[in-house]
Image 1 (cartoon, one colour):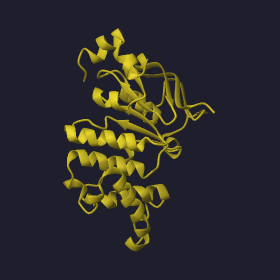
Image 2 (cartoon, one colour; image 1 turned 90 degrees about the vertical axis):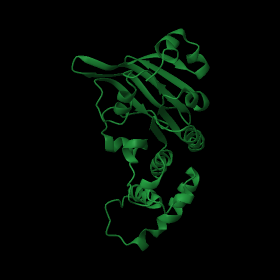
Image 3 (cartoon, rainbow, N blue to C red; image 1 turned 60 degrees about the horizontal axis):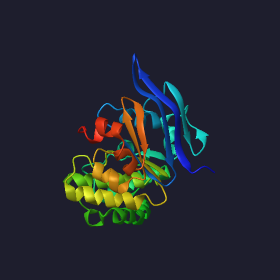
Image 4 (cartoon, one colour; image 1 turned 135 degrees about the horizontal axis):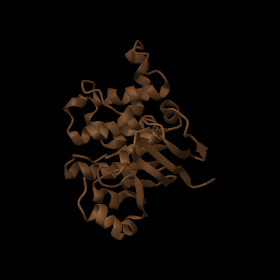
Length: 250
């Protein structure tokens, strides 16, 4: 079996006369942390949207664990265990932190629409919910309303609800955006911990996070791959310095 969990071959997306992503060949190794970086408008979000079938590709193929998933819809992609954090993990602000995770656990069990079920019948999920909250450092906030959490802890709760689905491939879209330094450090530790035994593909602007966490980095510019490799390799690339690292980023 190949060590590649996710691969794109010639991935292309055009919107009318504008090609947002062109011939992207991405290889994400199993159980690696892989970053997708680039300036605003580079095509990072479009690639995520193609992988999760928000958009259908104009051309190319997407392979997951060797299977061609190009023609599958978003629901089928999610059932395979490819989960994008912000899509699945929106929190309910007026529910407790624990209940947010419990709802996500219900989703995995296929009981998400059975809101008539008694609280007692769902109590079996409490132990798993508390274990997940312990994993992400939110156990002390289990009874707090999600709305009352700091911004960084809300993002942490979103990751916890995503982890409730136990995805083998997790797509994180700018997990540290807008965070204070302490929260960034907490999220970095969390990502490193949850990466054990799963594959992570992340879009991230904070280069210290990328440098600390990521095994492989793909740099996009104008919808095409500019460079790919380790942080040391891409940060030394003159084209990358000119396009992104040295010229400011957005």
